[in-house]
Length: 380
Image 1 (cartoon, rainbow, N blue to C red):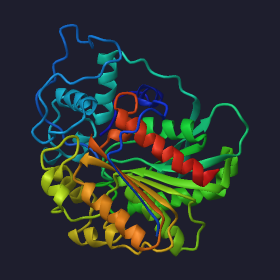
Image 2 (cartoon, rainbow, N blue to C red; image 1 turned 135 degrees about the vertical axis):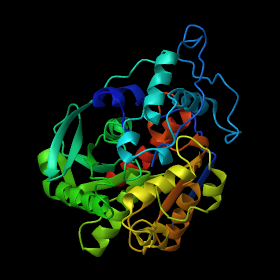
Image 3 (cartoon, rainbow, N blue to C red; image 1 turned 90 degrees about the vertical axis):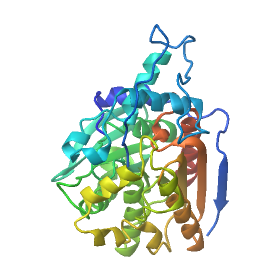
């Protein structure tokens, strides 16, 4: 969803350094979209602030759909419910883009909990890469480089959200990896149908390879990272690079990626009411991005049916209460079967969109740390 705050503020409010106790509940190391929210407003204490500064705790009973949701994650979901957003299927794309996002909810929880914004240690600039496509470039403060480069693709079902919405993730990657992060603003449906976002993503990657040096980046140390629809785009960039004989990324991190188009998987069936993403929301995204239903069978959308051989090592991060959970694990298994070194991590008690919430959700802090560790190992 479209965020309603300045980009630097969004990154600063949600960013938190990696580290702390591990909260991963399923980790498998092998070799080989965003928001639909409605509900009742959450009710903080009478002062509207946490009773203990820095404390993040829910104020309501656990949702029926999330009996094992982590308390900090639940607190953010309660803030999302307080916005009283309409479900995506009731909205046009233009209307949906104006609703507050899960990132807004996390920032509201920071205010309620009295959590200060950490300092921003990356410089940012917006640059046009080509007609219709621009990027926000994050560069570590201090040092002349060249730095490793991460090409980052935000989520939003190829329909909603912007670099602003996902600024916290890009900022965290820049600061913790010590890399230039090129966060790509690709065109979206329904104004720009499939495969526009996919083509924009690959064109942006090629631009970065050719112009990394002008960004203080090393063109020989480039990785791709994406969340949700952006995870799908990142994996597609790798596949297209392989097929078009372009230099492959050194690593890819796919955070709860859209990896299939079957909306009857076990996780789709189990997550019809979840927030911020559920089955109805995903079907709405598909409807807005596809030209015809046949597009959903295209391996660029249905990654679990794609040829995955010869891709670079991969980390996949999954969320628990997420319709995309099943296909993320299937993609990890298929990458492994194709001979790709794959690290799969599922974070129990979390929801879609948790990755950028490290300032308030411990599991996000841990997930960022895992992604950073893998990226550093590949880009050293």
